[in-house]
Length: 231
Image 1 (cartoon, one colour):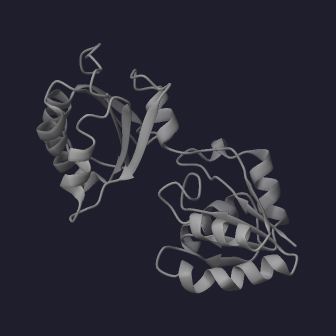
Image 2 (cartoon, rainbow, N blue to C red):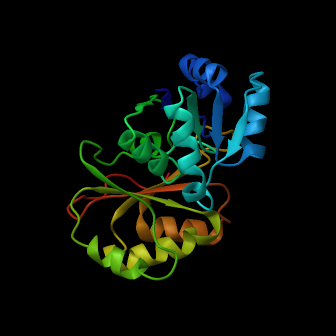
């Protein structure tokens, strides 16, 4: 039996990759990459020339059986996404599940993921939280938010730049304009920014300032009180 490694890659600064991650990627017989073009830039930077196979949400069901067979034959396979930890709002879950079912050892390396720094730097409680990732774009979006109306834990959402204003407006409607929020964008990159305040204040900010980059929105739970002004 081989080994399946889930390998986090930097969400921004390439210095965030670990020595262990680099070693595993260099030793792997095969690297499953969400987008081989994006991952190719990372691998070229670190002079890693191992074989890559495209593995994303549109082909994972067609690819997974072939990957498991290679694992059963004794190969080492590493899974990477475009950025962050595979399986966290990215491909990775399916191949990990099927490898486990086949008796293959699955090892996940600790490393970069976007929501942890956004949560810890938000100033909101991070001892207990719920990670929601990307909300449904259309069907089920409103009902999911309604189900979170009474959530007492800090809530974490991923959002794309062209939907940030819409998301914040919906949060104002569901959670109320005074609920505290921290919106972090471009984590670990040169233009990293955190905007903190009430939902209404942060909505006003991004209505006046065009959202750019990838976003993590951290919303205080039901009983959380506002602690600081917008920064």
